[in-house]
Length: 481
Figure 1 (cartoon, rainbow, N blue to C red):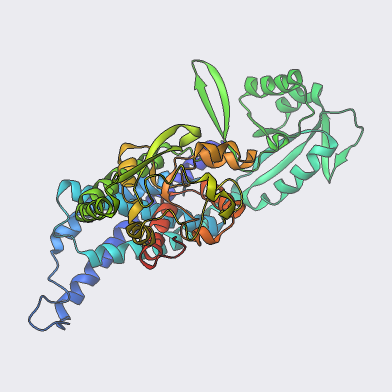
Figure 2 (cartoon, helix red, strand yellow):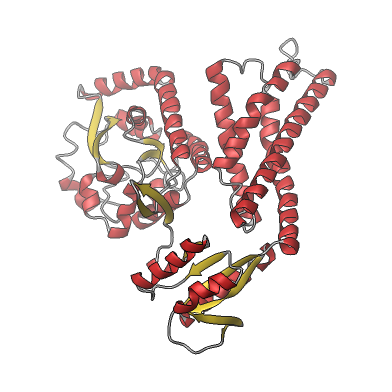
């Protein structure tokens, strides 16, 4: 019943979203067309008008592409999940992220199909901003409607199974959701206590009584809490629920996991419950890889003149190699060769040991602000981050990503504390939070924590934001040495 009700509300919400998207696109397009009819000011006399005439029919037709793209992004962005319980600030963030992803999708599709030539950029920008506001406003109204209906016409009865100590905190959490139709049917004791009630909730019996309780009472879900149940007793609870078609849930807090997310998969009949502390959204990760290929490929072509000039300057400096390839640790410790323009003398690695006492970074990282091994041209390309440009080739090949923790040296990884090794659980990148937060001015432990913060909060929207923040950092040379 709960799943049917939830599916109905998701379909209703998606239908409302579709109407909102259509009306918002038409409103923005109509407003842009109207403004274009009356706006005659040219910022540069004799040049093109500030607002060119709008190809109205073409922009309206693009709606056939906009609607499915936006709805799919909203679905993949989990904006239709947990409509009964989602917090409004979380919902707003999800809508913003989904809209950013949809905009990237739309730009990529129109570019690939070569239908974006007549598409107004002001319409696209205005819609991307407006639709976040209209979708969120409509969603708030829908959630209030759902909450009212659930409160007045529908309840979800939950039977809690556990010991006295384990059930009390869960009962407190469940009470917070009573506005959404959650009702506590009672408690089944998993220990030998004689309490008639726990925290104001009636104790209906012990584990032996569970089949009888499920037969005689309207229970929608059985929720087991705590780690004191044996495997045999847990199996008894699951079997009783399965026989009657009652939903069975088990709290996994006893594992002590704080950031890992659970996923149930089927492996040839084996039900496997997996916990992952890294991003698992396959579609979003595929989009991330697509962005890496598209943007790194474009960068390699656009920056070819800079590559050529830099190569000539490096070669003329001392006649040594143009590129410097160094073994780095990538995803889960896989090694690969990361490329840079050579900015140091040819024997820089051999001289590293004699300069170890001058290291200015804590932890297993070697950094010297005024490193005597850096050449004259090397100091310039380091300051402007030009030395990092060959890593676009690593990104294009799939060894790195545009955004991700910087790839460390294998020798550095050997000295990591155990918690620091989790930064290897995501593909390394050219830029990350550390790069836009001070780089060499930040101590090693903070650097590691920033990388883990990126992994724990990863989204396509975060990648786009970090790429945008990297540009001024590179241009101004903040933190570079």
